Image (tube, rainbow, N blue to C red; front, side, top):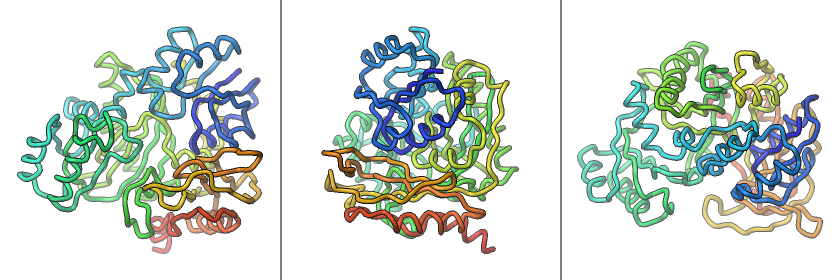
Length: 423
């Protein structure tokens, strides 16, 4: 197969690393990619948002299969445009991508199909949202309805914090994403991420993971796009996985088909394990970042036929096999993230990788032949181990070999699982 991967982050580097191992791969391109992805695929200098140029490239290079990494091109309808021209695409239609593109859409779907989630209301103006918040009290959750790069959610522990979050949304802090807000009940419990491939009619459960959203050790400081992750998530017992499939994922697949927008791609369900059982916090319609990095490290099966089966309605023909070991990734970020940070700071040496450890590039570029940090989240130092504790020790051992003066990371990734392992 001639394959095109779209995206330029750590998730896409992990996908590229895994896809490149497939014996089915004849030619592999990525756009726009990054220096890490360039180790596995031919980089193409086209923006992930330039649908016409992407279409022209696919025609000109007789691409057989397109894998869309990030959410924004999916919400913008890239997969529809490519499918209309006869290309196989991994990633949902624009209509189905509303599951991530609109928090309100997903909450309405849950209400319609009786999918467990927190109680909510949608608002398009601040006074009504604030009146609802005052009536409900805190803690309470405020979400910008649209795509806000992981930053449009405020878990407000006081009413004042919630009211300020509403002002942020309606005063443009998140651009168009904040034109509508969803105010929802605070769910108490432990979060987990669950991934499941779907071709519109068939589901293939993948694996569980747990992300660390707060910037500081001990889950302190502002929310980020994710400072680290591990897989599997011990909080997701086999019984809870089965309940998640039955009560959340399967009704979503049926509901989307029922509404005339069948879902094809990957369900990334953000879950809260509450006293009542698993409840949906939100859906994403692409692999998580940095969860994808730990999933790819644990996946034994060839990724390419799995994604192609999801894209072509043949998911019933394939299965996924996983390594027993745990995988853990530590995000190295630019000092100042998630606030403002200096760009183009030099990165010196990176540790040597092997089959059980890998440094994925998330926000890097080559400038005058030197590797520099261009993003907030820059490197994903990822390792396997017999336990989460062992994977953590291996990953942090590699972190300490990275020479990058402007980088920082949390030092406690995996703490919940390690606490469970110690019993």
